[in-house]
Length: 366
Image (cartoon, rainbow, N blue to C red; front, top):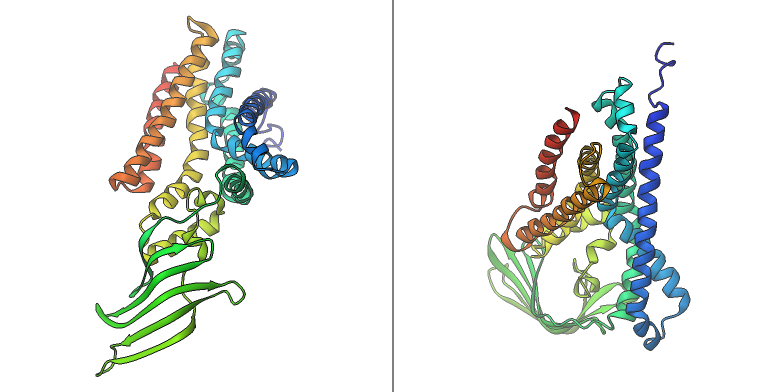
């Protein structure tokens, strides 16, 4: 009965959470509105020249652009929101009144953590399950009306489809789903046991299979070499035409389960660009987690009155938030170019700013 008489959330908690979330969503709405205006002015010529339908512009592009952009910068918006409303509370002497009433600084941080938790949960859910299918529609629109038709320019394509099975093609035409000068090599115990050479391989869209044309097979598995040739043969290979299409931003179109499965598949096949998918995977967790860190930093900075007022609070907050984003970009470059583990590269900024958050929290609580 005693526990029931003391609710977990008091009026002051609800008051701070409402200010936190209200300022956060207002900041997102303002920034997104401005961004859409600038984006329309930038792409209006492409929309007109390529005859993009108005319905597609509104529903396929901008309606899917809003959650993507909001989630991309949710940590920054969180930081700005915390700095703004906490600074106003501090200069209205509300923070002093709360602490003077017997509330400890640690207890004061509870509604901040609850608000950050709500935003982090929303961000994680959006990033892993809602935004990927929306990105599929948005990126398809971008490729069709803004970037133009894609042509695969890769040459001498090598892929491992599974352990001991390798394919090669001189080039791939993604318009016709045809790979030229195609070959398959099969190894067992590091020895070549079979090799297929063909003029070209084509994807049959009805059968959902690859069709090999004008093939020549050397079977070396037995005591004697066996040679087989023919005009056409169907085969099932662990690759799809999408693997040779436009790869940029592909990781953004996959939900949580698809991304994990695709990473495992890429590792099995020995594909080189697996790092960018692992970075995307870890960003979807580290980004929402950074909401807690930046909320602590923002609250610690803005809860004290300093000379310079809210403007100085916002200036310091923006400097820290942009330095966080820059540091994240630099660390991911080390992962893609320098061989750093993607998990470490993505989480290093959170580790460093956690130390800053602890220092500022202790400073503010004194």
